[in-house]
Amino acid sequence: MARLTALWKRRFTISTADGGRPTAIRLLRGGRPSAVGGQFCKVGVNDTILLALVVLFLLVGCRGPSNTAVIHVADLQPLPEAPATAVKPLRVAVAAIISPRGSVDSYTPLLQYLQEELDRPIELVQRRTYREVNDLLESGDVDLAFVCTSAYVVGKREFDMQLLLAPQVQGDTVYYSLLIIPADSPARQMSDLRGAVFAFTDPISTSGRNYPISLVRQLGETPETFFSRTFHTYSHDDAIRAVANRVADGAAVDSLVYAFALEREPELAAQTRVIHQSPPFGIPPVVVSPDVRPQLAAELKVVLLDMHTTPEGQAALQAAGIDLFVTIEDEAYDSVRTLETAVNTPP
Image (cartoon, rainbow, N blue to C red; front, side, top):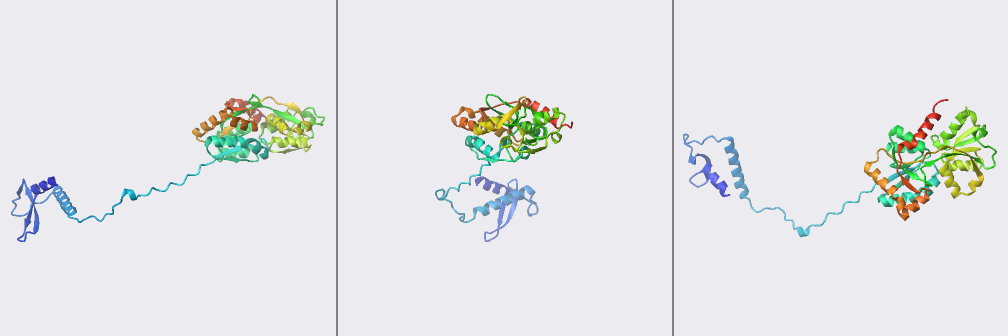
C-alpha cells in the first residue's frame, strides 16, 4: 500500500475545488506539475493502465463488508463413494471336442479355479462347431479357448490366433486318431468299411475328419464314392456313442476323448473296438484371441502353469483329465498342417 501511495504522489496530483472535492487528476513530470499552457499533459498508454489500476485499487478498498458465505470445515460431509465398476467377465470357450454336457462337467472345476485365482468372473461360451468358436476368437467375443488342433492351425493362418499353452495328458502332449467300429463288426481296416455309414465329428477336425479322409484317399476314393452315407456328430463322445449304438458302422475319434469316455462309461469298451491308430499329432492347445492384452495373456499363462502345484488346482485338472499345462511351440502342429493341405487338395 505504501508503495502504491508513493507511486501515486510521484506520477499524479489531484486538483480540488473550493469545497475540497477532486475535480481532476494531473500528470506530473519529474515530480512536478507539467507546464504546458496550464493544460494536462497527454497521458501515454502505460500511464493510462497505471491510472486504471490505482483507481480500481481505491474502489476495491472502499467496499463494505463482504457478503461471501463462510464455510466451516467441521460442517462438511464426506462425498458419497462412487459405485463399484462391474468387472468384465473373462469369456472362455470350450470347442465341442466333447459334447456340451461333457464340456460343462469336465471344465467347470477348471473354470472355477481360474475365476478364484484371477478374482474375475468367468463366462463359459459354447458353440456347435469348431469354426464358430474360431469366429468368436477372431471377433474378440471370446478371450480364452480350448480348441482342436486343426481349429488352431486354421485360426493361426486366418487371423493370427495366439498359442498360449498345451495340456499334458498321461505324460505326453500328443494324441491320435482312432478308427473305431461296433465291437461285433467283422471289419479289420478302413477298406472293410466300403459302403458303410460313417460318422465324422467336425468339418475341420483333424482326428475326426481329415485323418479318416486321408485313409480313404489312399484307397483311391473320396468319402462320397466310398461310403454309402456320412454325417457329422460335432463332438467325439457323440461319435463314440453313434458307433456303440450302431447308428454308424464306423467313426474316427480323438484318442484322449475315447480313453476319457471309456473311463466314465465303461460299457462303451464292450460296445466298440479300435481297428486303426494314426501317427501322433500335437495335442489340442489352449489359445487366446489376438485382441487379448499381453498382460492378461501373461497372467493366464502363469495361473495355468501353476495349477498343478495346489490341491485345488490338481482337483480341477483331474476333473478335465489333464496332468498339468505346459508350454508348446507352433512347430508341434506342422503335421496337422500337412494333413489339412493334403485332404483339402482335389484328387
